[in-house]
Image (cartoon, rainbow, N blue to C red; front, side, top):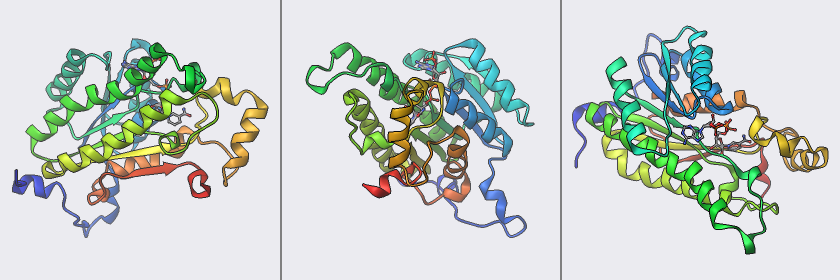
Amino acid sequence: MPATDAQAGALTDEVPADDPLSRFRLDGKVALIAGGGGAIGSAMGAAFAGVGATVVVVDRTPERAAASADRACALGGICKGVVADLTLEDDAERIVAEALDAYGRLDIVVNAVGGGAGKVLYDAEVYPRDAWDWIFELNVRSTLVATQPAVRAMIAGGRGGRVLNISSVRASLGINAGYSAYVAAKGAVSSLTRQWATEWAKHGITVNAIAPTFVDTPQVAMLLDDPNFKTGVVNRIPLRRVGTTDALTGAAIFLCSDAASFITGQILGIDGGLTATQ
Ligand SMILES: NC(=O)c1ccc[n+]([C@@H]2O[C@H](COP(=O)([O-])OP(=O)(O)OC[C@H]3O[C@@H](n4cnc5c(N)ncnc54)[C@H](OP(=O)(O)O)[C@@H]3O)[C@@H](O)[C@H]2O)c1
């Protein structure tokens, strides 16, 4: 299907003469942050609100959704927290409908539900199916279920849009630590990023992913609390430290902004140079 003028307009590369930096902001955009109650999702919500976005924080824990929405609102943006299980299609449909009812449009979806790797470490030759299925549900199914209705809304809106997935350096690097399901799931997230970018370009929707190395969050605290493990990780990273949630938000804002209009299907490593050494 050929792009309409409105869809093509969503991919304009024009630099506003009066305010060139404005295309790096998200003013007027409505962003849905799936898993926005988590460590990385919460930082994304706050950062997006800080550059003008209206933010809908989605999480399955009401207190976390509310706390992250408050954090984002404190930066001056319009925002709300909603509760949903993003492995359930009905929940995902509902929260997209709620966002459209409240704000009239949807421009961005960030998929920050995921993780779990450190909780299910098994040797590859005996990796249990239930752990495998759980990791895929958490990382791949949640990404699919949240994205489909959001993108249908973007297509119907005719203004293009942005999808930002969170993959991992583990999509491309093995690790000798029982990560079979996680590396496969993040490989799937990276592959879907390229596939969706290809399919949805005709609608003016770009799809990219960030691929962090270890980020200092509760999810990986159990691993990083072990000084030997942390030293091993840090010594492999040229910048000699693990990531922080704030280290991810600049790239996320950029990829979801008008400034990234000609970037799609890309997996951006945010890893202190780790993958550059491989
Ligand atoms: N932290 C790292 O070092 C690191 C590195 C590379 C990539 N990543 C990726 O970054 C993403 C976010 O990681 P994070 O550290 O911010 O994890 P997190 O703190 O656990 O955040 C994920 C949030 O999503 C929620 N959630 C889980 N399943 C859900 C569902 N079905 N419906 C709605 N909400 C759900 C979680 O709630 P519950 O607590 O109830 O599960 C949590 O609030 C993940 O994809 C992870 O793989 C993380």
